[in-house]
Image 1: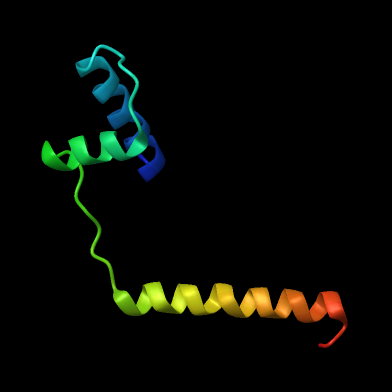
Image 2 (image 1 turned 60 degrees about the vertical axis):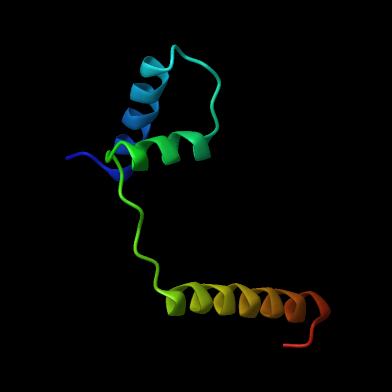
Length: 71
C-alpha cells in the first residue's frame, strides 16, 4: 500500500528526473504535478481551516495560562 508520503516522494523523483535534477522548491514540484494531472488539489473546507486556527489559538492560550499559573 502506497502512503501519501510515498506518493509525494515518488513525484519529487519523477520531477527531478524529467528536469535533469535542477534545483526546485516543493511549491514548484506541486504546481508541476497538478498541471500534469499527477496530483489533485485538495478540497478545502473553510470551517475545517477556521476550526484548526481556533484550536491552535486555544492551545496557545492554555499554554500561556499554565506558564503564569492562571489555570
